[in-house]
Image 1: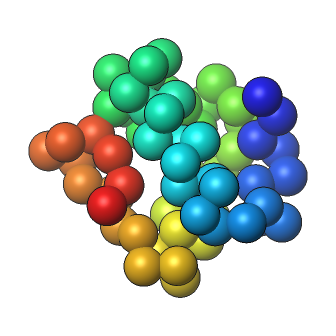
Image 2: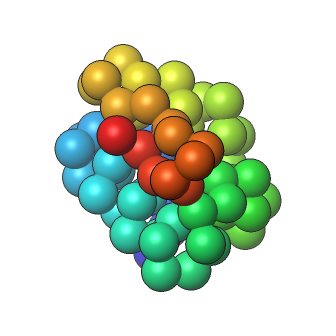
Length: 63
């Protein structure tokens, strides 16, 4: 999966993809996911927040 174009992705699809990756590959660590895919964590959080999803560190996913 290429997340380099996450800024142009549908936010609902992005939400699903990110949460799946966080769960399956990164044990809920958003920093590791951002480094692995070389994306800006704050831009990712801003994009998802605009669609109503916030990162919950205690669960390691967006809700």
